[in-house]
Image (cartoon, rainbow, N blue to C red; front, side):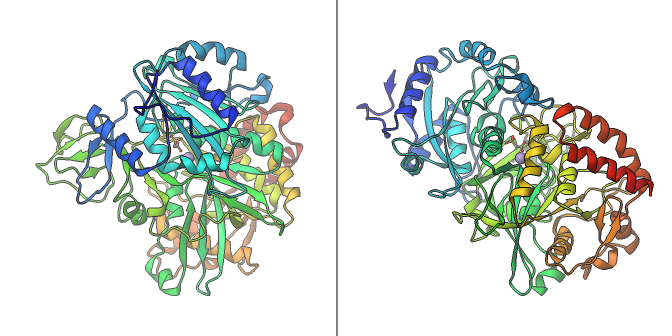
Length: 599
Ligand code: SAT
Ligand code: MN
């Protein structure tokens, strides 16, 4: 093995634990070359040049999309794979009923032969990275080792990589190691293993998103959630946004929604004209992950550990999310979108159509006439990887080292029925019940069937690094630790009428629900007391300029006891999975809900 540079350079760190782990990975994986990522622009140019040369990156229209490239993943590797994602705690019981479990010894025995020699002929990249603002007391260091240049390039956008991370790590600092190899991209030899006790990640056989960019779901959610449980903070699958009212007062919200349920769109919301003229504004702090700590003032403070957006492309248009489009006009890596003959990225729902006789190259690399609509041109889980700093509606507070103070927490998902547009929990404990019973229709973000209703507590079902019953208990505990806890809300932008059309227009109009939540937080807004929570009547919502018939707004807000009655058996079955580890407070909340529905 030789160093990438002509004369081998000394490693850029004195951290003995890091040097030992890198040496161990080099021995195991036997790469031809070792490259320590420094995060420089030269390094970026070299990564891009190498990928253009080996065909794993395709240039896009240089003038209209400067610094943008297209990557096509292997068609068998287009989403997270939950069946091969494991929590490798010592005891199976500690992984809980919602995670796949493998013992740490079995995981090592299974994956060591896969990693053995897997980087022969390849470069091993060492990527030191910071999750959270550089220098923030709340940020943490990870180091990913990978043989994928695509991962090395993507990590530069999604995290803060290189020298800054090594400086923050210092000679004695702690880091979360993650070893990744694309292996041979064989679905039968694909594993994403988390060792929460050692705070270690091993991922083999996939180059895609959450399977391969180990800072994101593997560290910032699965490992971090286990750390947070022990240390009294929270690592959550949540967007973070800043709402500014016409007087200039700012309120911060965190929102948990399952993958591909509109977190990016909500975080980048553009107010409808009637509200914009009044001075309402939404600014983005983050679109996927929040780390939250109790501040000295007794409030809950949140940082976005990421530095970029890994957003779903299909459906992103000038209509739905102009801020995301503006964010992705330069320095963006598109994965599995389609491309026009002139090199413009294209996806279903982008808001414009190529000429009828035009040809597009689809996400698999097949060029066919646009009139051939036999299958989608972009993969439904195709993505953009774009620097947060390019987002036109980014809050100036997005990198505040202490984070932003959270006043409201939202839980949402795709529900065709039952759940109203917005409701407020009676208490923190009731809010935990709402989070624990969240359900949503599955999306293309994970391999498997889409559109199936499943319980996805706190949108953390695929991301909780330990027993979910203990996670619920941790949420209850945190309620006792936060002297000034945020208000908790449940939202549903996706309710449909009997004919299957959406009752609520969504997108920018969701601001009306946020404004009501803001009023409630300020102690001003009124609400109707229903068996399931505090719900606005149509008159409680700020509806100026909304082009939706009153009866549809009323239907979007309606609480129908029959529908909620039908939820009960399913919630019971869901709760039964957690056995003894289901906190009795949640059993109590369920009984209280049943009682209120009977009354
Ligand atoms: O593939 S990722 O896990 O990064 C995206 C998602 O599913 O939310
Ligand atoms: Mn996500």
